[in-house]
Image (tube, rainbow over all chains, first blue to last red):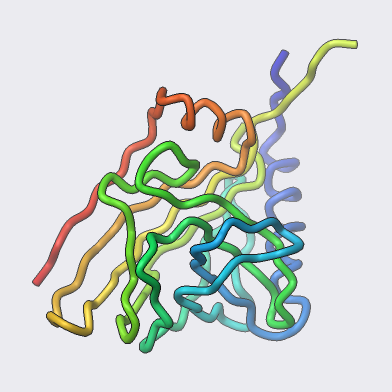
Length: 132
Length: 57
């Protein structure tokens, strides 16, 4: 039996999570290769920086990230990106999801490989803690 | 006790990757789910997510 949340509840849940990213200065959006967990993040390939306030207030359960500073000199790796983490300025991972060419919770048809020196930018990022 | 579950989190990204070697920019639309069950479903090959890669030179 599924649970349906009110819009107010969805906003509260989303805002509670995104607020954690602002805990210690500008947070980071990090793309990683190695298998990782929330407590043991893997090897960073590219590191982008959130604004001091990472996300605006949630609306209809969805929070939109404020401007994100690009990584203009990515570390890169021969292996495709496998994970993305959203973490505080102190490096505490708040959100993690998998990234892969297929069969993952982020699906890239052709995989995503970042080379050393590439510039990685994120022009749009939204997050919702509860989708219904 | 009934197995109660809500719909779990979702991330949506638009990334641009400018390649140092070529100067070309790849634009990638990403959808990410944080739900472990959704992940298992995708790992089993019943992937219903949209994704695309687009090159804008």
